[in-house]
Length: 252
Ligand code: ADP
Ligand code: MG
Ligand code: MG
Image (cartoon, rainbow, N blue to C red; front, side, top):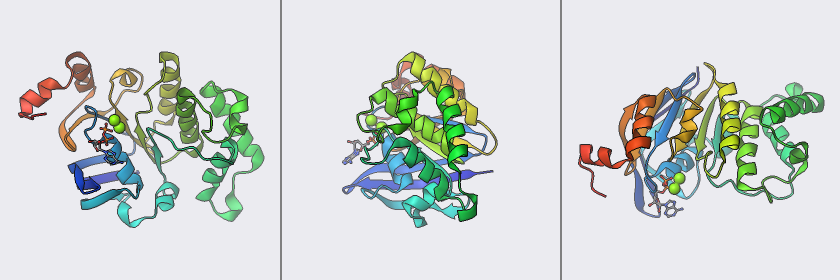
């Protein structure tokens, strides 16, 4: 079973500490939702785990399948099966979406075990059907001129094609209408298995109506301050975050 383990992680951006002792354990078969107010460090967590150079890990540790994540190069993390969908995906010019996905699929495969063009086409047609994505999509340049909703669907297409062992999905629900949200949820639910673990970072509870998390964690001021089951997300939807601040005596 895949496992991602983060312990007492401290991360700074330009000498300001953003993550202040973040910890979590995610195993295959589990979906963890991380919720929290804006500016609390959720995207910082995702970026730090994927090795964005701007984010300095000052202390703590993270292991992926027992290996020190911060000892791995960024592309090694991806090849080992860690997938990150960013809140603001970057635009990559000159590479079509299909080319990008196929080379990413083949990156962690031996030379004699590459995905053939036929296999690739069959799979991408199938997954695009699931996600109700238009055929022209795969020939367009990666993320260039994609609308917000198209970028999100495309991230989920990449997710379904790559079948990573562990995914960190940051605000994949932002800017999606309810139909797109359902389609994205369907894609993620398709991946659910003992061989797949997932961290869903979200400000809003609504995505969790369609993807039932096993664990819900509330993040404030750079660390997890409360954990529970799906009912915790429901309570946050109804009551916001202030009651947690009151309960824990956190000042804004
Ligand atoms: P969240 O995703 O929970 O909304 P972020 O991780 O985006 O929070 O941001 C946490 C804090 O770090 C905020 O105070 C934000 O202003 C700051 N921050 C985030 N990214 C940068 C950056 N690239 N440079 C400087 N400060 C940043
Ligand atoms: Mg934010
Ligand atoms: Mg964010």
